[in-house]
Length: 101
Image (cartoon, rainbow, N blue to C red):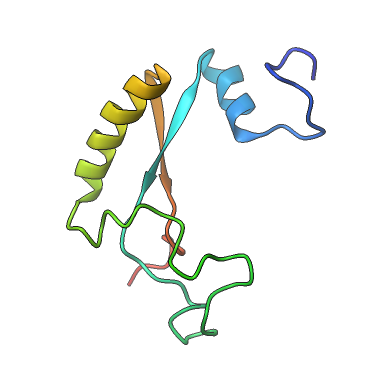
């Protein structure tokens, strides 16, 4: 793994993998779809998983009325400027965003 940037870890993290494919930093943009989780809503359990933040770990943008499109556009502008990134990947963060009705 010596050909990877910052290859000091025993595993290949997502940042290193994306760098090896695109040849530059790929910045994750955290998106909030406003969804819940079966371990929170009572279907499987309540309170979430032991590693889950009770308030969620996302931005809360959905609760503030921001669509996914707006979150993505704002994230690209903000993080592109901050990290000089030109490539981005959408990353759904809060709760379990694969658990939609």
